[in-house]
Length: 116
Image: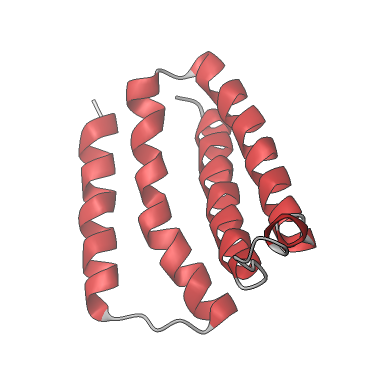
């Protein structure tokens, strides 16, 4: 895997993580009553989340053209670290030490699975 391929995969995972934050923000606007559910599903936040996911999906397809899936896919697990960190700084959600221990274990697993 080249540096450019690695950065493309990492950027895709970051975009997907940002999409998760946008989905969380959009969830605050969703109203689950029959008369309001459709209008609440076209909020700016939800549309932005879909656009971010669409761009990430296109980039993921481009990345997979040059990298084996068995190498690229484990990097998706890095979202288990990125999403809670973004949620902490952008949404004020609390973090605990076990989040980072778990992220470290996941990062080690990614390393083991992709390094030859």
